[in-house]
Image (tube, rainbow, N blue to C red; front, top):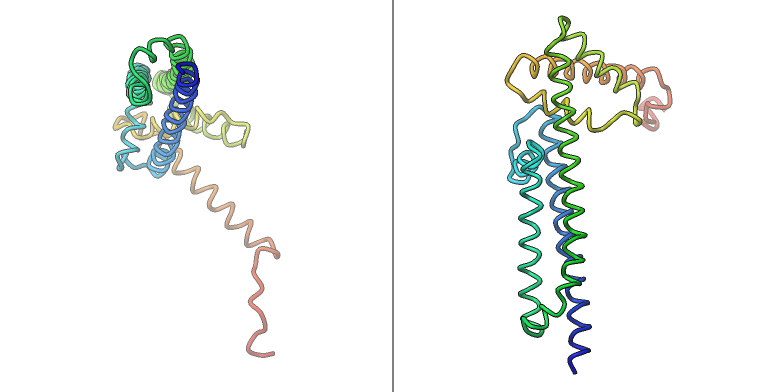
Length: 211
């Protein structure tokens, strides 16, 4: 009778890990969207989720700590579920499968941490490039123009880094913020003129009072 219980426990372990991983990714995506909204409107993180994402992407070690914490939560939840279904000894019998699940989760966590490190490196590169230049505004303007010209092919990590640096209360942050503000105004004006020149952009108001 132990084999069916063992098989069920293996399935539950896999399902539990999958659900927790999905929930973690969902929370991360929601937090990212809220954080992006804040920084793209040049605001400090306001909500709890936005502050959490800001903490995650500020330092590589923060992302590593988050991944390790998730590993502990995952193991703890698997142990609780295993004891509820069977007993701790059966959980220990499934330790190889648990280890496999943990390795997959660890790889996912490290991939996320690596992306955070890439963003941090990009921020440092931008700050160094602008900080060592005699024409700081010109360098910042060239970066933004180059990204804008690339369109959807532009590196989203660079945009993300620029908007994060724009939050810094120092001269480089102020310069990038001014450049981004100016680019936003240019885009808004060009879209306004494009709509004005396009006859198809004017909606049909229907029959006038004269008809």
